[in-house]
Image (cartoon, rainbow, N blue to C red):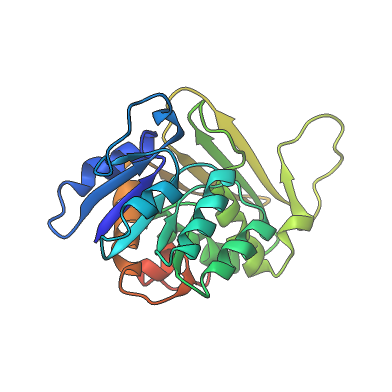
Length: 265
């Protein structure tokens, strides 16, 4: 597989490129990043590109290409469209998408293989199923709160992972998350509503990513948590997804498809 990385100078993009070098069956052929503006990029053989379109056009003679995208909501939307127009599989790890955005990206799966996931780690994707099962056994009498923590540079809130965890609880309880989610609390908010699912966000320092799901009853509290120690965990997941969709013709998938996990959550 020949990999193009969008967001190549970002934290995740840099980690992915570094790890690709350790895989015998993978080759890094291009990095796309707006920070290359002003650099001298004149050779067709350069592995630095300002846009994905440019990268795809200049590497069109290379077979078995796949794109890994860790950029931003707007950039990823454009990159997914570009990938579909050039018939190249894409793995999208960006967050901040609306339900309408996801439907658009899902539509590209009719032409190319697409993996879209707010979190590429094995642990988090297992945790989604765990949270679903915990919610099922405890029942709706236990209030659910989610706390997520990330570094100061993360631009969207709540995290895509927090939304995935909340969706897991909402799905099990058969409620519409959009009508029952509460993002933080301030002022005279009144009593908590029965089906409320709370999400609180922390942005500080260089926290890679921490998520805690709290189920609170009248006489006990159960907490399920995940703490990322290194970005390499997410990077390896993205690479695994890239290899996996390289064997697909088309379709829209998430990380649990890649990992072969039960998707109850």
